[in-house]
Structure formats: structure tokens, C-alpha cells
Image (tube, helix red, strand yellow):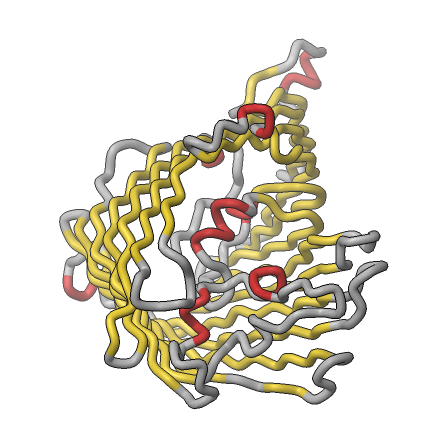
Length: 366
């Protein structure tokens, strides 16, 4: 939201006070008793992210924003009230439209929600999106009427005594080639280097080209879409393995929604996309979620076999339309590995944000 700052008559149209407020609550009850991929647990917490800053508009349509804020987050029942303040947000944002192309830049520490790409759960899990709310680095985005593109860098670890140097370069894009058909991709390269104590270096590359069919307008429904994608990983533990491992698989994502009630099903068939998950370094530190950020069910097989396997994630949800700035979603998830039922989740998420008042780009839902 922008409020004018007292200034000269010439400056009033250019310089504004800017603020943004995000509130998020997540209830995620996981009953995964039939699988060792992830433990049964309940995540229940809330986050408040207020931000303030200055916005400067130029006569040529360019806009500059400098914002600062704080990420306040609490796991309910933890009793750790003194640990509420998790991270500062501090970033510069530039946006400009030239002809039909909109460009936007973020630099600093800024919300992960600025990423607009369509990302498979193999890249980023629900837990990561909630607990790691911000990116630290740079993001560049372009949008046209029928296409968008983004590329960025997230620096997640500075070299230290116990802390590994770690950063990710990521990119995604999608373009509509027919009224009902789009081609897109998503991918990242993770550099997982050593610390003073922990030796070794792991390369983790994952790419996901896909084709999407959107038939919503043809049938008069809120959503009727199908996405067929291919996942290819290229990974190498340079010190402890030496050779490349290249797991891959296919993913079919279908979603149907009308009257705010929907069904979404993601089917993956392929190999373990996280082959180094249980490996440890020379100080006994497990790679695990430090190296892989996706849903652990993409490890595919419960029996530890290296053979290919099948994973299915079925979601039933209700997402009512309440207001312009409030989003509520109630979901039930069911997980299957092969023909075996692995467990379920019940999830309630609530998100209130004013970012649409200050952003030059409309949010894109996955």
C-alpha cells in the first residue's frame, strides 16, 4: 500500500511511503505410519511479516521500492516466545513495463512468494515453503501476455566452522502456444560445498520440462487442467562417490475444481530422486533435507530398493472465495507408494496479504 509523503508538489507524484503485511497460519497433521519417508507429526504455527519502505515512481513508468521488515514466526505450543523473530527482510525492488513486456527485479532478503513459477513438489516441499519463507539473493522476472520467465539465486549458507557454503541458482518459465496449451520448465542447480569441519562437495541439478493443458474455459469450470512433465536429476558427491548419478521419472498432474471444491492428483513414476538422502559426511552430518528440499516421498520406494517405483499424491480440497486479500484452503491428502497406502495429511492454511496493492504483477497460482 502506498501513502503520499509530505514533499514538494513535484515530488508528491513520485515519492510514497510503502508498506506490506502478510499473515499466514498453517495446520498440517501428518499421519504417515505406513512409511519411513517422513515421520508422523503435526505442524501448527503462524507467521506475521510486516514491511515498510519507500516507493519512487518515474515519469517513464519505472518504479523503485526499498523495503525493510521482520519475519515473526511461532510454532504453537513450543513455548519459545523469545525465538519469535526469525529473520529480517531487506530488499530493493524495481519494476517497469516496456511495450508488452513487464520486468521486475528483487535484490536482498525478500519473500519466497515472489517466485511465480510452477514447481513440482520434487523441488520444494510444503514444510520448506512454510519454514524457509525468504530468499537471500537476487530474482529477475519477465512477463508478457502469453509467457513469463524468471531466474534467481538464493544464497543459503556462508562458509563457516560448522556451516557449509550453499547456494542455489533457479529458473522457470512458461509460454502459451495454443489457447488451451502451454509449454514450460523449472529447474535448479544446488551447490552444496564444505565447511571448515565437513569436507566434500555435492552437485545437485534438477530440471523439469512440461506441457500443460488448460480446458477450464472450454467446459465452464473453475479449473480443469492436466500437466505432463519429465524430471531429470544430475547429482555427484565429488569426494565420497565420484561418479554422477542421474535418476529420472515422469509426472502427471491433474486438477479439477468447481464451486470452490477441487481434486488434485500428482502421479510420479521413476527412480529415487534423492539418492544421497541418508549419506553422511566426515563429521557424521546427514545430507537429508540439507541437500534435498522436495517432498521426501519422491524417494519412491519404501523397501530401500534402487529400482523404479510409483508415487501418488491425492488431494481433496475446499478453497472458498472470501475476499481480495484472504486465502483459506482446507485439504486432505492421501499418499501411495506403489500399490501401498503410505499415510494421509489434513491441512488448513490461511493467508492474508496486502502485496497485491504494492506489486506490479498479479500473483500466479501453481
